Length: 479
Ligand code: CO
Image 1 (cartoon, rainbow, N blue to C red):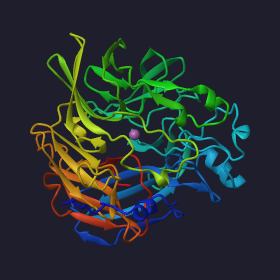
Image 2 (cartoon, rainbow, N blue to C red):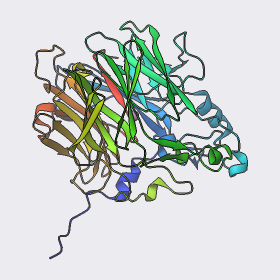
Image 3 (cartoon, helix red, strand yellow):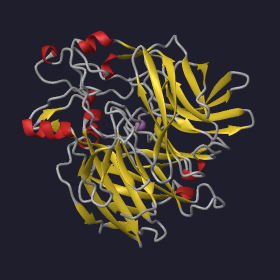
Image 4 (spheres, rainbow, N blue to C red):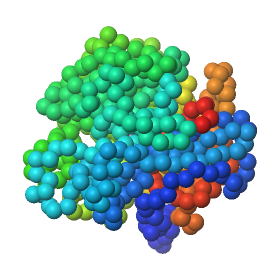
């Protein structure tokens, strides 16, 4: 007998989460199921594309959407929501002109075909990837350019932030890593071409930025994320080829001109505290996000989500028609690296499509037992992410909280109940935005991290939807 399985989602529901949110608002969340824990105090910031068209002219890819920041502040068992678009000069110019003026990284070209895009290598910075509060500044981040400073009280855009030392054209990562023991925030930026330069930056806890080291790497580099341990800054260079001709001639966006070479190894780049670079080969794979890394004896343990190939946006195709069974899936892997012996091994930890791995803040660069990620509702059934998983890396087991068939999840964020190091690593909450296709609105869901699969601690019903976002962060400061 043929086993019939019901699909975990409807495409119509899923696509509704990619509609522009037209409003900017600030309100108390008054529709709450369960109760917000009174110890949950601070602000969750999220960033992601919030607008997918200019005057009805659609962007070629949702990842090109204009950055919109959400802030959900928690205090005394109550929550307050605010959202604002990042007012970049490009967005303001496009809104004024009423049409698309810029090419974007993933899939957006100016109208008028290749003749209207030829030799234009300027790329719009959508400021849409992440948001972090550090050293008294709230920063909207996107690796295309410099961060934007925002007013932490009302999310209004203050302007481009160069910290007094960064060149105007310096790309700056959307994936900073905060070392909980020192309070330092580590960042990087990559200028790429035939040779790439990786600049590694350190912010002190007070927010003073300095360049810690600079390393040169042969060839094209697409480095979205990195990890830090007490002695190393670690990158994995995906074996990409960048076909510059179609991009320069205006036929294709930069993102569509990348190709993974499956016959070439990926390279682990270890930069030590003195700025020395050691390069080690591992299996060819594509990585957007790392989970965490730590040192154990002579070894470095690194957990990352690895894809067998890179999913590129084909020109003249729409993400709306994507066949989930045909796109490469990311799985969680553990790398064991021995810098002294120059060896690397890699093993599969979670064979289930997943993304956005996070750990408890105090585990960054230190040994972690648990990771939380967004995953699919049913193992081996390709679909958008509809569940949150907690993986126990000691036992190899995982548990999920499933929001299928009508809920679609984003990145989880772990918030400790108590920031002292002697509490259990998973004593706290997992916060995630869930788009509810039935009500066409989003919820902020609070899960008990020690009972992920159990009933949510609280479900905060927002008054509208929040389009699928990328990354965010939690700060104990209440804004
Ligand atoms: Co990212």
